[in-house]
Image: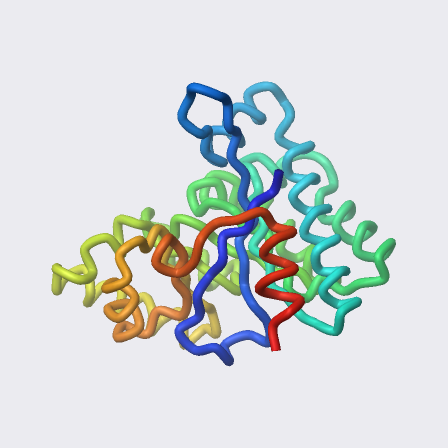
Length: 240
């Protein structure tokens, strides 16, 4: 089951609809939940990564179609595995699927880990160019964890960057961390890139991030994770 991680906006007018990140967990009785990262890693080991990627994409496109049919706009961050763009014609599949629904991809963001973008830089650039005619855009996760972070902002021009937890976890108690986040936010704003702080469970951190002008936050403090259908019906389609 695909789940929704709601993303809280500092400025409710930042986008023309709610933002959500797609996720999934594997639950087995008597065992801890298996995270999306672990699922993606296992899928790639068994050469099932493309199937997982396509499933997320199809679910997001179907959700976008439902929202548009109801006169609403939603924005979806779609996680892709590290090797999603290395083989196959993923951009072509996205284009064909959108055409079958008679949709533009506005509101859909293909999210890659910054580490994967660094390792597959040429493929990512080609993928980003191929996406442009569809209306879809790129998002980067784990941003700020590597030395090449700022070159990705210039070369890929992502719409969103999810800040590395190493940058945000000490923002409330460390002046150095807060200063670094403030600098990243200024550069991102100059390039019309929106920032997301993830894993924010302490409500007090929301005020700190707002003061630093971080655009979005996700985690328990921002909203509970729930099945995508429940989020779509409750938070998106019934929103005023």
